[in-house]
Image 1 (cartoon, rainbow, N blue to C red):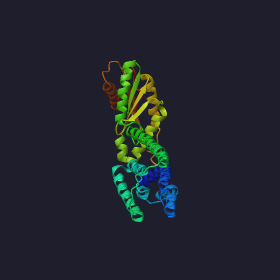
Image 2 (cartoon, rainbow, N blue to C red):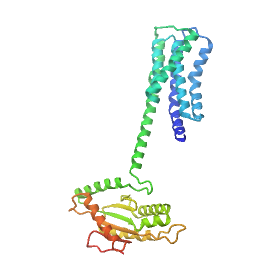
Image 3 (cartoon, rainbow, N blue to C red):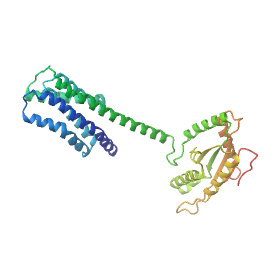
Length: 352
């Protein structure tokens, strides 16, 4: 309900300004066609209310309604009812009638598509019926220059207003699309890249290193005995540990380093333009810092990391080989005591 209400308020705000412009411009055209006809004073009063009071009243009705979206849908039907009424009252003067009915129909299509267009057409027929009962049904095929000039503002300003609303809506949709695209790449718990996004970027970095002969290192990070943490202290504590590691990664990494959550308790990092020895030093600092983490209300909890590193080698035929090298280094770290950084290059010893 809250989501529907929020959309309804936004819907009402988008229509408010075009309705002000459209109602005022339509009033000019209707005035030009009404002037030669002998109409009672209440018709002129109704025209003033419809042209200059109704847009503001409609906005208040929508924004103060329990469900603004439904209220604005009713307001659009009132717009259509008025247009049918004025078309019949003007004795179906061709230019004004076509302009008036088509503008309202265009608004309905823009706001609700075919469904709202059909509902609006029925409301227009109802308006025609009301005017027919009051004034009879007459046809006036003549068009004078005053009516032509009176229609010009409606034919220019109102479509521009509708176009601006559509443009602003397209911009918002584009922004939402970009935001959703970004969210689809992010792990909701840690705020880091998710598994798929990180692997896509690994492919890009692999080809970049291959083509530009640049250096880069990847790290696979595993929280030691994480299942035991969950089983002993619960998943809430486990989630807090995962978030803490993601926080430490942000603190210790550079802006252009790419960190992601690879699996349940595994994290992954791409370190562009960084050699293996430097990456090992940074990861060792991360390991030491993380080992000092203490969970609130659980002073006995201890955490540690096993980390495997692999730098890019020209002999790698694809990104999977590079990742497998880091995975083997991680496997070795986990099976030689855990709580250590291990590298795939035998030139660099283990860090304990």
